[in-house]
Length: 321
Image 1 (cartoon, rainbow, N blue to C red):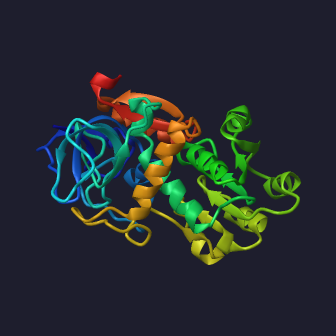
Image 2 (image 1 turned 180 degrees about the vertical axis):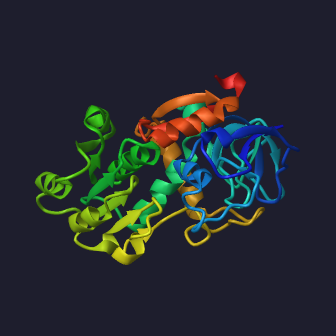
């Protein structure tokens, strides 16, 4: 089968499609014939080598954490899903390789009828990340939340999931994305100098939690929250620990069930189920910035690194274009 990988650090051009043996579903896993899968901004940073001191890679590194497709294998111990079902979900961190023809998932949920394959293929990783961070920040009814980088793949989902919990959401984005953020349920403002004052004007009674999806402004975000414990970032930043800000990432310290064949993290499964319910109610959509054929993964990485994509970037198998 085809899979997307890279065998050295470097620019987007090191990403390529390789032929490998098909994986198979083990205990507590399913395999899907993939229709679409997501591109992770975190993986573009890994590929470029910017995080090699924090997260050294073993090569070849096979990319992708989330995918959607049709179930074609069901592993031992799995119930409630059958061959032929349409699902979306995520791999274990130890397996990855979701940008491929066949993908083994460790956590999954039924594909919402309202979502296209492209939307479903790019949903699971962002849903899991947004749910994990909102849970850590204990976001709920009556809270005011700032989402820094609200127009990106994770930010767009975080805005909608926070609003669904009853929170008031402020989102930062470039001005041309402000109407888009309003359509998702956020009050928009811009990045950069003066952010603290702009947010205080929008939330005169204070901000209860800050979810950083963009990086580069942690001192301002701490000032806005008033307490570093109320700020969580998903962007690796060497200043986070010194500032007392928690870095949340899809790794064993933040998720369980990381070993191949281990049971999925119950909270991740619950987050996917909540997403399905909201999607079925028309309250959660997955904005897709661009869709590329699997063979054009390098171009997808290049777009991701531009930081100009509004929503999720996905790779699509040819029969789902």
